[in-house]
Image 1 (cartoon, rainbow, N blue to C red):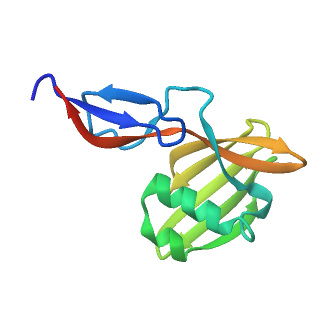
Image 2: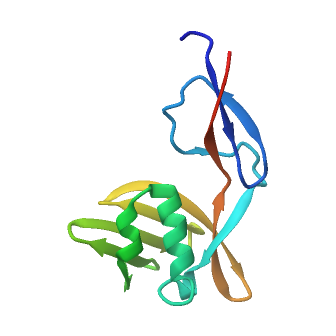
Length: 139
């Protein structure tokens, strides 16, 4: 299998990269300008709930997210958390204004960091472009 390369492609900007390790499930796009709007943090439990669930489902590949109920909590300091729970499984999204990001954890382990931008007094959540494995194999 020496010399095999797998094509990864970003659906957001079209960037292509070839890698020798197809095990990498989630790979950020190499284009630093490639970011995609996901949802508004202020409305995450209401109007933007379907968008938040779609983003988490896409990134974490956990089907139970579709049926989870969100709960917003204040954390230590200036942090705010939204928890999605079903049975013993828990996803937390923690917003940290000082770091200007949201950290997503699945059962307590850090998984993803989403950058945020404050636009028109709303906290908008973005994701860097994510490369997807393409079935193309290049020798």
